[in-house]
Length: 322
Image (cartoon, rainbow, N blue to C red; front, side, top):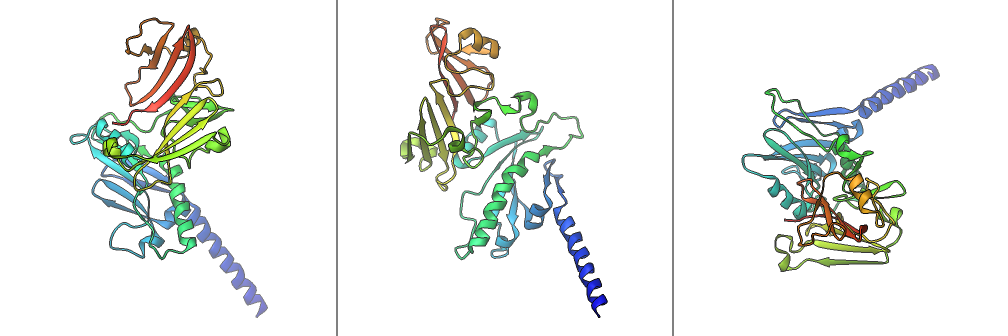
């Protein structure tokens, strides 16, 4: 009898191990309609359903969804596809300020981006564990989205994906400030970059709700953090108010530097050596030693260098909200 019991225990252990291995295996999700794929860790894939509705692909917490199966509920993240015949990049820029839409890439036919749900995705009766598990999946989605890849087009159309290494300096987004080898990038969310760990506690912090004069951004939240020689502004959609993304950074001392190695106090010669495609900002100033320079990237992100007497006095990084 003891021998049989031992065999049963061993058999159960083997089966549990096999199940565990299966759950830990990555799953490649492919969408043939829009032509993209993503790598889903096994544990994540086992806990979510992938649902398509309209132009959105939802990644839904199975446990939460089971409570309200009639519609996508418990969305931990979504991918949005926009037909180029109907939408432009300017339209997508508007979405960034409205609910934190983030651009992923484009194919010959579609623009792609992703976002978290901004409305309530958890039932009122959800347990602390359910909430904790949901938040963990939501956070994991932030990492998983980095595996987003567009498929090779069969008809030879040009496709591009997320910003590649060639568009970055040492793997860091160009529109960033660096301190002690840690980067703070425009459009980063506060749960992706720990400002306190990098910069310490701010000298002051204020949060305001934008009024009717903010037009389409009325009701959204604006946070301002002031440090010695640095001001950081962050934004949060009006239905959120808890999670913020970086809208602008104004640097007035040498505490941080750009990925190109430029900081306050750098010379104009250093600036031109680091950035070959600078343009004088057309604000009426024409003295090359006393004017503002910006990068010519034809994007809605800006990096502006204020130069006085041939020396960088201020660096401004900001997203232009339409």
